[in-house]
Image 1 (tube, rainbow, N blue to C red):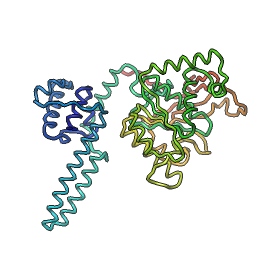
Image 2 (cartoon, rainbow, N blue to C red):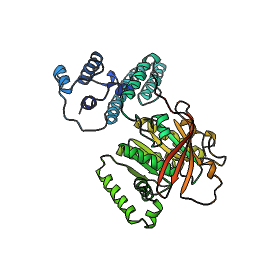
Image 3 (cartoon, one colour):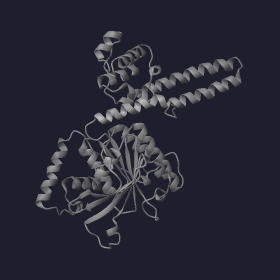
Image 4 (spheres, one colour):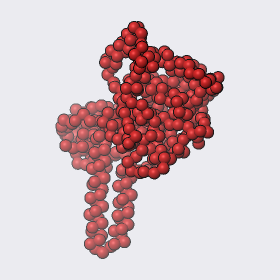
Amino acid sequence: MSVGLGLLHKILTERIPLTDLVEKGVDGDSFIDNERVVYDYVSNHVSSYSGVLPQLATVAQDTGVTFQSFPDEPLDYWIQRVEQRRRASMMMHAVREITALVTEGHIDEAMSQMQNGVVQIQARGGGSSLVKFTDSVPRVIAEHDRVQRLSGRNGVPFGIPYLDEISDGAQAGDTVAIVGRPSLGKSYILAAMALAAFLFGATPLVATYEMNYIQWTRRLLALMAHVSASLIRLGKVGHFGRLRLLEHSRVLEDMSNQLYLMQGTIKSTVEDLILICQEVRPSALYVDGAYLLRTSLKQGARWERVADTAEALKLLAMEMNIPVISTYQFNRKGAGELANIGSSDAVGQLASIVISLDNDEDQADLRTFSPRQYKTLELIKGREGERGKVKMLYDLLTMNITQTEVISGYIKDEEE
């Protein structure tokens, strides 16, 4: 099976812009033999006809290349295999050149060739990239025009109007940190965000390390039906409340997308999470208790594990081109500052967006529990330096978690 033709077949049948390949490092040199013929033809067609891809039948007719039947795999599947082949070819070529130099006694030159080969192969493996500013400007403008033509949200919605307006939703490659002191309601906010994405039509994956999947299912269903999660747990939902639960259960059966739940353990690693993501291909990943995760490669102090995990989640977001939204805890110094995120500075440094959760000032000194509470949700780090604070209603009797007012910040105005 020709992996190059499989990749080209994918972009032609699903009308994926050729620029998506270029942004992932795939160019003409990634293809061989008749694959290169097809790639050059498609590239010329796009350049000649205002970015429009040719039809598959047109390509076959004009190039004489016959496309076989290919498995319906994701775009990244084909890109990964084309790049693996390219790196393997580079390695074989380098080995032949180094062998020839060693045979002729040119040891220093062979060493230099070996070092250059390693750098080039690592670069193909997703390392640092170098682009010209003048080359990247047209892509930025093209992306602006694409987003401007879209109807609705470009990213995966948070379900909180202020955040969605200021950020345009969670974007592919984002890592978002929701931070607060223990028992402030971070998991509820995360559940509301995952549910908003699901109802929007996305496919969320929730990885939970603080609660089991039954607790998460109960909370998600409670948020959908506006029925108390506590009453569901205690078996005390009234007649009409139970009818609402059944009604929303039937709604779930009719939905074309899925919401996945992964229950982790204290031994769970980021590598386990990556495997699950590769299997279900979510639109967005939600990690409840990311500070409990670890990597399988390092065993160190708590701050080292948290830093390593934050880096791994950032790489996961970028490699899989999805947003990753995670919960963390503030240390005892309290909310509102990046430096106060518990265990590691890496969380605040790596995150595209950091959201702080705290009790509303009017309720900060309440010593009795009330099912109707107010919280403040503060954007303390935005992609472009945005800041803002909103007031959130937490009504755990009707399971209503909504924004009630913008305390500070600004809403983007439409510009000419």
